[in-house]
Every structure is written in C-alpha cells, then in structure tokens.
Image (cartoon, rainbow, N blue to C red; front, side):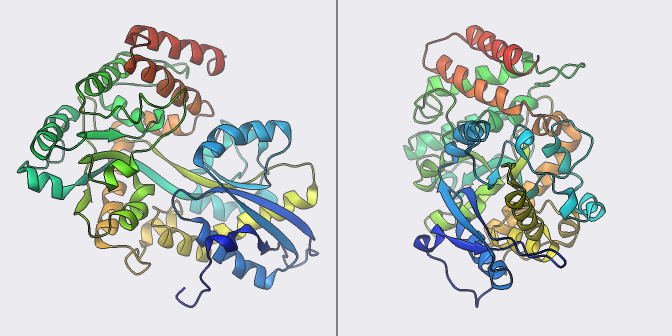
Length: 429
C-alpha cells in the first residue's frame, strides 16, 4: 500500500473502473457512485478503484462526494424518481432494499453466506434470501472520553458497568472543574439514542413485531430532556437542528468542549486524525442501565441500484463483488479502521497499527467489538432493530419530536404521541 499513488480530493472527480470477468464481454458503461466523505474514506475508494481499472479499463465511474444528510434524506427520493446513482455507500440497509440489484448471479453465494451471513439479513428487509450488499463497515455505537480533561479535573473515569446517571455525575464534575462548555454530547440521531434507551428497558418491538414506544424509551427520553435542561448536554446539537436532520458532536469533542462523546466505532480514524496529540482519549465501555449496557450495531454497505439498464446493473454488481473479495475486504477494513463484517477476518484479526492506526484506535476497536458481543446477549432487540426496514422511521421521529420537547414546543407526552403516530402511519401498516 505504501507504493500506491496518493489521490488528492481533486482527483476524486472521475475514477475508471471496469467489470470485465472471465467469459464476460467488456461493458462500455459509465457508472456513478455516491459517497459521504465525512470519514475520509473516498480517497481509499479511489485508490482501490485505480487498481481495478488497471486490469479492467472499460467501465468508468464518477465519485459523487456528498454530505451524509444527502444520503439519508435525498437519496431515497432520487431512487424513487429514477434519478439515483448506480452505486452508493448507504446506512439505511433494509429501507432501500426495493432498489438494490441482487448480487447473487455475480458471486459465490455459499462463500458469501459463510463470510457475511450475519449481516446479509439486514439488507433483505425481511425477505428470506438474496445478496444485496457488501457490508463495508461493521459499526458499534459507544462513547469516547477525553482522559486529559478527567485528569485535569481530578475526577475518576467511571468503571465498566457504571450507569448513565453515574457518567452524568462524573461529567458534571469535570464540567464544573474545567469550565468546559458541556459534560456529555450525543450525535443527533435516533440510532445513537436507541442503545441507551434499551439499557432502560426499551424493547422497540412488541410480540407481533410492531414497533412500539414503551416505558423504557420514555425513561431514557426523560433523562435526555433533563440533561439538556441542566446544560450538561449542549443546546447546539439536538435542540438546535430542525426536523429529523442528523448532526454530530465531532467538533465539540475535538476542541475539548466536552469530555464525553456518544458516537461510535466508525469515528476512530476521524478522532485520531483530528485530535492528534492535543489530548489523551480512549473508547470506554458504554454506560449501562437496569436492563443492560445497550449499543446499536450497524454500519454502511456498498450497494448497486436498479436502473433499468442491464449493462449498468451488471457492471455495478461486479464491482461490488470485487470489493467484497477477501483480499480487498482485508485491505479496506484495515485501512478504514473498521470492524470487519467478514467472519473469517473477524476471527483472524486485523493489523490496524500496521495500516496506520494509533494504539488508541486499535484499543478502541477492540473495546467496541467487546461491546457488540455483550449487547448481543443483553439487548438482542438492537440487532432486530438494525435489520428492520422501518428503523429510520423511529430514528427520525425520535430526533424530530424529542428535540421539539427539548425546545419546549411539546411536552414529553406529546412528543411520544407524535412518535407513535409516525409509527402507526409509516411503520406498522
């Protein structure tokens, strides 16, 4: 990898690819790939695509760099209108299923089941079979902590098994001692909140499989309101953004404005890049509640979309298949500091440090992996929710209406009624 040509952002506009496969004629097609570069992964895509192009020069692909909100909010509309890209890195894995090209004709299905069987159902949206995406990043939600701020404040970092209330008390003490802007920040995301809510008993589904808002959800929602009301959580993220829009707390953590940041494993490389040597940090076990220590699994996947053009669909599918092969998958997961979704690579382990990660990043990824294993036992509904095609219905409703409650526009009871209305209209019908 050290001998690869460095790809600048200006070079990302167009990258040549091909779908030449033994026994298959070359396809002269132009493809487009949508990717959010929030995690600085587009350059790696471009480098790998250059190698693919070297052997297969007949298919070209244009990388369309967009904000993450474009993928969350605009891509589904584009796909419905028939104006979407040919390929994309997506996180709404089940919700976009009607638009996916089935990769089965272009891959060894048995090998894919062995390697990626744990995550393939997330793309199927309840259907029994089909292969619809390469899971490029197995993610786990969890917290980052500014160890330097805790040390300066003379406050002990809570031990594994500490509750969210314990962490609120500790971060309030850090905030008071250091004069920091806030004590805790959480990405403005219903996905980010779901794991903590499960720690307080939120089930998200009833016995019939319908999405619900229960007492556990209400309990953690009230904690979120209390922490924003007291100033422990900042007004800049959840209350300040409109509707269901996503917002992250990266800059607040990078700038030492807050000692605790609820984010996830996808952010390890970004933290390393932006924090550098400015302070010591670590990934810590996720806080717990009476029902366990909840996280949300998830991640992103590279998918090919239906376009009505058989040649484009085949070329797109073959590129996804190539990216998911073990050699490329090993490189991708290591260089992007991602937990592999490939079972063999999970068992083998990856040399993150050799790929450029710091010891903090490597240790953080191990911590996130341990959280995922614990959650599988304690809060299995997290995996059910991640695989639901309606997951984004409750995620978006959570951010929109809880934020309205934080702003005093709704009471918590009214916010929960609004969330239930969204579920009745868009998820449970």
